[in-house]
Structures are given as structure tokens and as C-alpha cells.
Length: 147
Image (cartoon, rainbow, N blue to C red):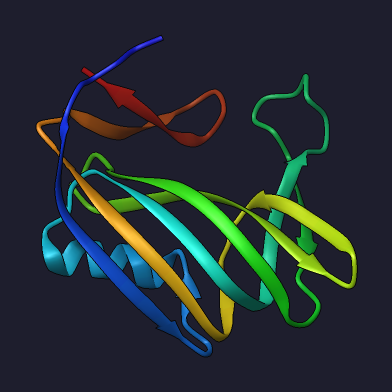
């Protein structure tokens, strides 16, 4: 385990509009506001897109993602971590549980999902933390590295 201790900076409450793309719109917001590292909490509605629900095989690298479509309006509760990539651009790694009609789809929202009607996000800026998403050639992921 690697740890970096920080402190809470600014806190933003954000209303995402119908059709906004997550995580793209939150990464753009973070970039515009100069947020380097942060935590994101998301609630609301998701209408379309794809969710990564795991690798096809756990023992293969790089993993082949299993993508499932979001077919219609779903409730969402999600949490993620913002950290800059090697070029300094904010990258949001966010997982969510999406529910509809008593069924739940849980996974990574990284490929992009769109807001249905409205979603609400809170971004907690974390100061004094040295964290970067570094490209890992084995997994082909941008993995969080902390100092």
C-alpha cells in the first residue's frame, strides 16, 4: 500500500444536465478550476452509454474489458478519484451502481455514460497530495501512483 496525506481544499456542488457525459464533463470542470486531486461523489440519473463490468478473463494481461450498455434511464450512485495523468490532465476513475426496475448494473463509468435529466456531483478537492495516473504497459491502465 502507498499513502499520501492531504487536506480538503475547495468543495464544489455541481448539477449535471441532461446529456452531459460522465466522466468527461467532470474532468473538464476539474481542469477549468485547477483541481489536481479530488474525490467525486455522484447521484442522479444515467440514460445511456457503456459500463465496464470486469475483465473477460481475470488471468490475462492486458485485460479485455466486458462492456455492458446502459439501456434507458437508471438511478446512479457513484464514487471516484480525480488525479492528473503524466501530462497534468485530470483523469476521473469512477465506479457506480446503476439501478432500474429492481436490477443493478455496477461497474466503471470510464467509457462514458450520459446524464438522464439530472445528476448531482460533489467534488472535494484534496490538497498537498502527490498523486499521478501513470500508464502501466502490462495492464494498459493509467494506474494511481502516490508519493
